[in-house]
Length: 143
Image 1 (spheres, rainbow, N blue to C red):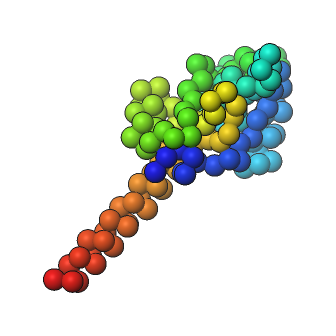
Image 2 (tube, rainbow, N blue to C red):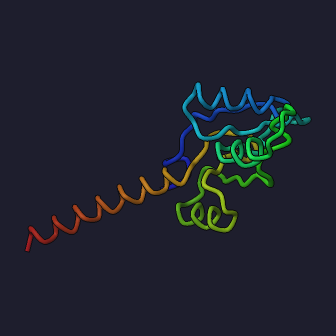
């Protein structure tokens, strides 16, 4: 199984100039735990960072500031991304090595095409184990 097989193409994106409050409202509206922060480049809008519900709590609310901040101020950097053909093993290694639970999927030009999270990896592994269990059970029934 590859990143594109287990991730989702439904990715909530906001420009890095959006406010933290806009991000919180958007995350609540779409019932998601993160937004991918897009930056404007010569090649167009590309993923530049990620803001999670934890970032909102730790980097904004815990800072106890009344000052309005933008996503550029609190995004997690550097952004860890993967290609659509990344394997589950590669995804787990990236998550462990970078201490992240969500990885945007990008194409060869760096354009955002999806996102895969730790929950997706665990669900895919559980499905694989269930299939392996059925295969094992089926083999025993033939003996």
